[in-house]
Image (cartoon, rainbow, N blue to C red; front, side, top):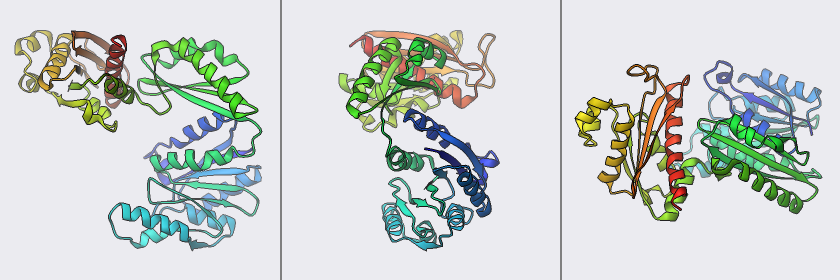
Length: 415
């Protein structure tokens, strides 16, 4: 199957928005035995969209995945561009309109004219339902036989529709069945993860891929076979081998983020957590409370960013802070102890450091982070991390994930 990808939007060409959809489409297709023949970015312009589709059709593409330009504003031109290319006039689509009105009602607002625009699609198009947002996607077969899959550019909407509506249909007709598993790892960089499973990359009966994020690395494991049962059996065996080699670097599978893995262990153990944050500025608590049901085990946290708040809000000894420095292992340990004591939690987790671009005293460069964890038996440990050469948001996210991993490992050791 010859597939192409076209991202539509002026904001993509001016650098205001980074397109991440190509990364997911290419990755998912590769793991399912498919591949892209081309990818391009075009502006919100009818003629540019037409030209892109003409070019893909002339090059022999069977399907084109379009993203973006399906919103309600006048600069969203994907519907018009596809309609002009296919020679299919735009018309109000009853199913699409019903879907839009249902999403509008869920948002407790009255319909407006722009909602009608969302449901106006090229004649002959089939609706791709959007359970996350208001803009429907659509599927249309053009006069040359080229299939168009048009999806919104909003990340959450695109992901849900791509995985639920489009990717499964692109696999239809394949003689081979692909079984796929994603392992989530933390505590090591992509190179170390890949080194541990290096010999498996050469196996002809599987496909492996490693993909690095901020403090996490995904390992995609795929097996292709003539039938689903055979594929699943081979996948189970291969995943077990990958897990064996990666050991405690693996914290979860599928979409389970590190915070969710921590939540799972806390819930299983009936334990609670409190945090004291400086360098992460509340991000650690935010990641934890992104997990549904977090109020059952996350008691609360303090963002003690300034030196004064470390002493006033957390009750740290001013002499300790003055002597050791507010960015120090000693202060991180005191913060963890106070977080646990003030909230009556099973665990106290703390972060302090320099997010940058400046550091502190000599030897305290930007990216220096101290973490500490106190549990039922007292101090579990304190750790120093250095994240050089990255910006403030990256330092904060990596520090938060390093703290979560420390807690996850500590609970595993006590199991």
